Length: 618
Image (cartoon, rainbow, N blue to C red; front, side):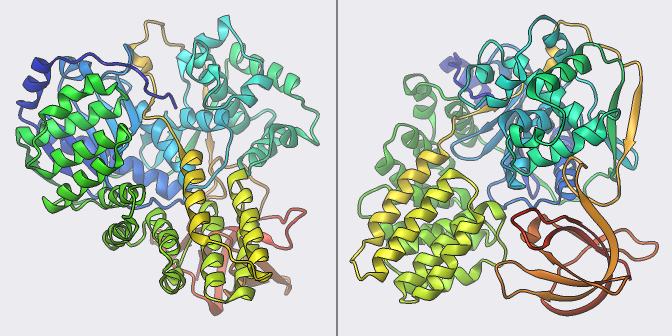
């Protein structure tokens, strides 16, 4: 991801002329196309994005959080796009904006699909809860950026010629690549292309190279599970230096590369859509928001903000986020209020209105009502629900916080520690100390990040003080938690991927492409795993412990128990003769179904294997 920190010159005359173009907005369930092009082009773009989203969700087995649809701005030509171009070669970019996620495209140029696929991979990695290093995150994004439907299959892992040229004249030692963070000079400086090239090459080699697959596949599997590169290489005859030599040989002298063909029937999604013409007031407001998300100085973006119409909710939304960017949260809160009064119904807007209220003195109760509305609009939005749960604690409504914990039917492993901490605080403040200690233990079990581990330690200290009869203020602790969480989550505005189609360098030609057929089961995102596959009879699902436990009877008559730590990441399907797979839900209690499954072997700190895929076959 490349943070947008570029000033873009844009005159008042150009802005006004652009706003007067005939723009339309076309909405699908997950996207909003904003364009001066035809309805046909808008629909074509929306369906491509829906298709891409469907592939990722089905193939990776992740579930997208509901919320404000991604806004795609599809300009009509280069002249319209130029004022919003973050740098000269960018034919498009992704921006994790202050108000929503944006994808901005300069019409239909060659290569725009790669930009979209790259950024969508980052989103899927995040939603899958994978704590992978920066190089692997970018490497995966580049692998999947070559997404190409081919009939009943999809090909990924195609060559990216520009990366080969990048490594011919310079090289970053892998030991340094492994250590790169988002604020490292290699990530956003002169060697950025080098870093991307080597990250792609190493991921490609570990994932798709065939000659040494038995060596490489376990390394990648460990990295995906969060191991350091030192731990991933332990037990092999490889070091960072020897792996470095392997990669140089792979990228500089290898003339044979493998792509992956993934079974997937590529069809045009059957989704509802509607379009409408937009007036100048809404066009101005949306372009002002886009300009604001480029990270411009307020003295420059103020021209656009001054033009927005305060009598439409989109104008008040733009004014709210402009105030937010300047740190004027009281003003932001007032503009959010006016936007809602004028008819805004976005869950994200309510969520941000709550956050503005939270940081405005004596408005904590208002933040609760805003969050309740955000959750009402999207009941499965986990982040909003967690924020509401914590806000109940902050305002001292412990009975409501304890009752609200029952609303969490599923939780991803990345958010589980946060949930169990809030449950523990709710139980502790409701005089249920034993239950609070159990919840605190579960929070610690799920703690992955240093932030989560530190918060679990603070929770344990809180419970110990309470047990000793000390008077401790939960409100103060929640306020400190919020401040640390904001620092932990702080990110830059924007994320770009350069369009290589604009490069003047010639493309390499591949001498041979050997497709790797992937197994029908989805064991992992990269198809490398130490999974065991078998058929068995599912006899019982126990849901009373920290995780659901599946009990199965194997063909040999033995009993097998497997943990189901995160149901949202398991591929659950029922197979009927002559039919396509259908999704299903697992219910607790006695079962008697023949299943086909795969599971990961237990590690040293686990007593059971971890379920990865399961299919009913009868």
